[in-house]
Amino acid sequence: MSLKVDRAEVAFTFKGGMLPMTVMELATADPERVATQLAGKLNQSPAFFQHTPVVLSVEKLDAPHLALERLCAVCREHKLLPVAVRGGGDGIKQSAWALGLGWFPPQEIRAAAPASGEAHDTGAEAAAEARENSEAPALEGGRIFRGTVRSGQQLSAPHGDLVIVGAVNAGAEILAAGSVHVYGPLRGRALAGIHGSREVGIFCQELHAELLSIAGNYKRLEDIDVELLGANVEVRLSEDQLNIRTLV
Amino acid sequence: MAKIIVVTSGKGGVGKTTSAAAIATGLALRGNKTVVIDFDVGLRNLDLIMGCERRVVYDLVNVIQGEAGLNQALIRDKRTENLHILPASQTRDKDALTMEGVERVLDSLSEEYDYIVCDSPAGIERGAQLAMYYADEAIVVTNPEVSSVRDSDRILGLLASKTRRAEQNMDPVRERLLITRYDPNRVDTGDMLNLEDIQEILAIKLVGLIPESEAVLRASNQGVPVTHDQQSDAGQAYADTVSRLMGEEIPLRFHQAQKRGFLSRVFGGGRR
Ligand SMILES: Nc1ncnc2c1ncn2[C@@H]1O[C@H](COP(=O)(O)OP(=O)(O)OP(=O)(O)O)[C@@H](O)[C@H]1O
Ligand SMILES: [Mg+2]
Image 1 (tube, rainbow over the protein chains, first blue to last red):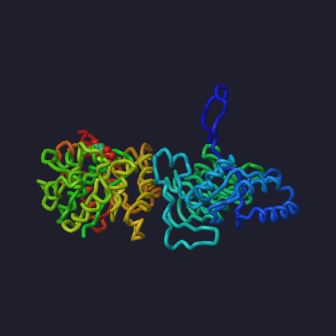
Image 2: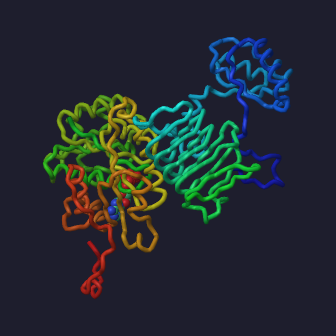
Image 3: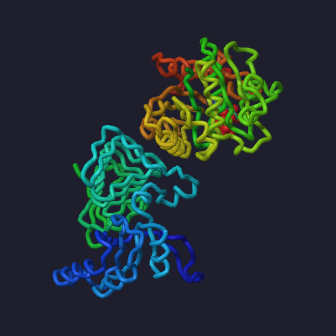
């Protein structure tokens, strides 16, 4: 996943990666209410508040103006480190930038945008979401997709598990906040625990995956033991290492 | 109301134009009023394969830009009744095609014809997306090699999301797989993917299998669609494909390596 460059000659290399990141979903724009709740949490689990980076999500708010600077200050007082803002209009984007924070578009829009480099260089707005089969029931947080997820398509369950009844072809990408289950061959990229959950897994009936990732820890096809290719497997994370074992 | 069929592939040079010409010819030979449209603006190949390049006066772009009427641009096929060709422009830029223009042309043709066959340009960009947008059926042309299969998979994703049928939540575009340039001998030696592997990955119904054949080259040099050469394997395979498109169940042919008979071994005659 890194650009190949000779280390001796360059000052840095860019690496793609999915880092676990806490999203703070704001239900109010009032900094004082946020402060009160944070103070309570800080007492409960002080271990969590160690300059932990957070993304402030304002998607659920419809306040055109936001005391963003004050909110950030409140976070820092409680040992949280805001690194970016997600959602909100142009005004919020501009103030995020002015405060030296990054800005992410709202989640629905991001989910439909091409995520992999490949979707980019083939020039496609083509990275269309796979079309939901009508018989697929909507789960609370999770998602079931019936059919083939094809090259260039991306399918995600940002709040739960993702179940594919069918194949995930090479060049396709499936992502879930929870676990990923593929009842069929997995030939594309599968990412579980995209918001940092480590207690999740990737399950598939036939492993040929281009990429497996749990909470940002990944293995590429070339890192996978050839003995495991084609097997029915379970992939889990233990100590930043992906473990693949066969199921029967 | 005509059935609109797009012949598409993603990857270039896999046999789209050959197939569009052969299938349109076959449909017309079976009595269907058929028009075949070249969407490959700037390259213009279909008229060569149909053998009507010297009769092109106006083209699809002229019609869309209002510089000519549809009937002025349509070329009547010399050999086959019921068959017309709407050529592409060789000089114009491919941006000259507009979505509304294409819709208008297809709407008027729909009233007259039974089948409209659209020969798509290669790629997955605007030109290919325009050619597929209004389709009712898609023939996805695939060669037995990994990159072609991958591109076909990509095209299938677009057919399920970037077409009128997908956007308006109508019944999905009917997707059919056409494998071309299949060489059973090279499949057996492992140089090429086999039929089952391709079908497993793409997971759509097979409408035909066209063998690698010298008859195709001969046909395109003569400007006579290979469907007219019913002595040849490719001509017969395209005729089978047309029958299946029209709903008949026909067993598959030409997918197994031929055991060469004594005479052909002695005289070295290949398959024709
Ligand atoms: N079954 C076949 N056997 C042998 N040669 C074939 C066969 N089908 C196609 N060809 C050859 O392959 C070449 C490409 O064919 P064709 O022009 O139909 O492809 P295409 O997909 O339309 O290409 P493009 O993407 O450039 O539009 C031509 O030279 C054609 O003669
Ligand atoms: Mg062509």
